[in-house]
Amino acid sequence: MSITKDLRIQLLPEDVPKRFYNLQADLKKPLEPALNPGTMKPATEEDFAPLFCKEIIKQEFSTSRYMDIPEEIREGFIKLNRPSYLQRATGLERALKTPAKIYFKREDMSPLGSHKGNSALAQAYYNAQAGIHTLTTETGAGQWGTALAMVSNLFDIDCTVFMVRGSYDQKPLRKTIMHTYGAKVYASPSAQTEYGKRMLKEHPETTGSLGMAISEACEVAAKDEGTKYALGSVMNHVLIHQSVIGQEVVEQMKIGEIDPDYMIACVGGGSNFGGFCFPAMKEKMNGKLHCEFVAVEPKSTPSMTKGEFRYDFGDTAGTTPLMMMYTLGHEFVPSAIHAGGLRYHGMAPMVSAAYDQKLCTAVSYDQTETFEAGLMFARTEGIIPAPESTHAIKAAVDLALEAKKNNEEKTIVFNLSGHGLLDLYGYEQYMNGALASSAYDPNHY
View (cartoon, rainbow, N blue to C red):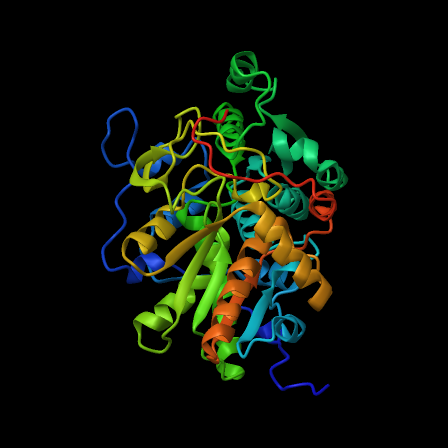
């Protein structure tokens, strides 16, 4: 077996991006402003002050193309294994017998297990600079909660995590990791907040949702000036932080002389897809790339493929500013799936705008299909992917098989957003034929 020069493309630590990229500067038309739910007028920076520190709010409202990354954050990125590899999936290619070339970005190699550390580190840094002593947050499958719990220690900040009850029960070792890092972890909805108590009373059997967990975390943050809320996805500043992934990919593709036909990432709230694809979208707008960008979501929560593009709340309680996004409705509670990080009722305003402006396409898959693709990837590449990441793998497999059918030498690049070593129960269910279908149910609660 020959080893090609593009088997693995690695940048040096000094190549970690020095600036964050903001797609807003290059959209065909500007984002619609967030709205104050009381006045229905454009939200101001003051409207976000109970939840976020000043620097985070400044980034949220910024339309600048680039923002300098403080050196302390860049050093933290290096500790989190930035820059990450761009690797060729030769084993998967052989198994599929496809003429397509398949590459994947290795966000799974972070000690935190996923891409979530990029924004967690930045948010913890900016809040520490503002003198904040506690961060509250939500987490779906646990990747974001794990990341924030760990990096909070680096800045001597306490961390409280509200974990969606469905994942809290499915993934007990995620709680252990967050506890190891010193965080407090509660199943959401919980008895720790007024909103949580109300949900438990009205829906005692609910599996919870990211929207509910966000409501609880926001309630706690709003009651204490020294406590702020840290969000794992959706909002502009999170996608801006995650742009380090895509900036690295653009450079690696230049080094490897890789001209992609497709760039793919799973999408729940939007941080993974936006971080991976937005810098390359800029290259396409400048005529330097000619690829298609594919967002892959679960059939249980198809906010882009079945949702409406309209104003909606970011949380279930209806306390956040209203945002223009693709949404299934803020009261929608998806059925429990193993890809808990994708169970969000809406889509990031920036990803929604990109989809509305035809800068990307979207597809959805049942979790039985994605686990099949994940198992194939594990057996051909030796890497067990997170259930979220298997969605991107499934789309890559389908496109590679299409290239085989048409005898076309396509090039596919996707983001492996995290590993699945704490998601083995889902793989066991799939291999035993016990994994449930995850069809969209608009009436589920």
